[in-house]
Amino acid sequence: MELKDQIVLVSGASRGLGREIARAFSREGARVIVNYFNSAEQAESLVQELGDKAVAFRADVRDDGQVKNLFEQAKAHFGSPVTTIVNNALVSFKFDPVKNKDAFAIRWEDYLQQLEGAVKASLYTVQAGLDDMKEQKFGRIINIGTNLVQHPVVPYHDYTTSKAALLGFTRNMAADLGKYGITVNMVSGGLLKTTGASAATSDEVFELIKASTPLRRVTAPSEMADAVLFFASPWSRAVTGQNIMADGGLVMN
Image 1 (cartoon, rainbow, N blue to C red):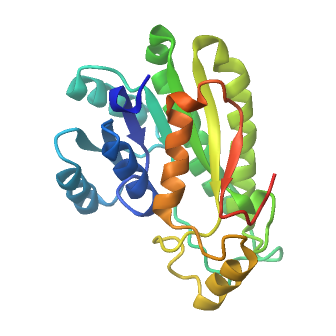
Image 2: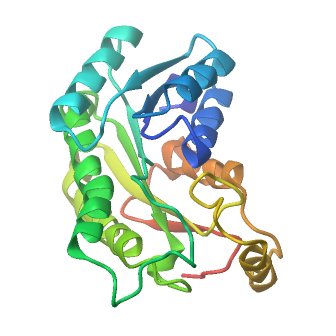
């Protein structure tokens, strides 16, 4: 299915990377559901920017009932079901190496919050879209990961562990859903310049990343968004269960 024919749900799309992913799909002609939880004003502003092929719906993607309602609203609005899911939402996390909890301070509750935001939310969005994807014999699921799983230069214990679990989720779903024409992949970025989550990162850290990266620059959210498009496009139709690093070559698989 061409990008222009897809109906794309982007969770956490009102800000940061999610905003750029929504813009990227809209640029290619797709219809876009801008999911948000707290940022209603920013979500509506984005919809105004993208035009009549975009709509904003509020839902806490950690709540099964709200997610099901979100998919029903989207289907009713566009007259067709969601074809493509981008699990991007990030729950209550800042990339702050100074305030980050170390091994002595981290608590299970911190892990649980991030696991629910990454894996639980992705499970709910995938299951909400499965029946329609199976019927259409087409589905694209793209999960947002991090290169910290392979290269934990800063030990963000709870965040990185949740993304490692999401990678396992991605590959198991890919193995299970391929027979229905559904692909499941992951795009993993490094620290992006700049999003709300990375705003607390110092210039010194960004400069260190820049100097360590083959491209000699820090990846922008719009660049990572383009990598997400690949997994939704016809060019990736034989690709599933994969994890692409969109970090300028900092981590090479």
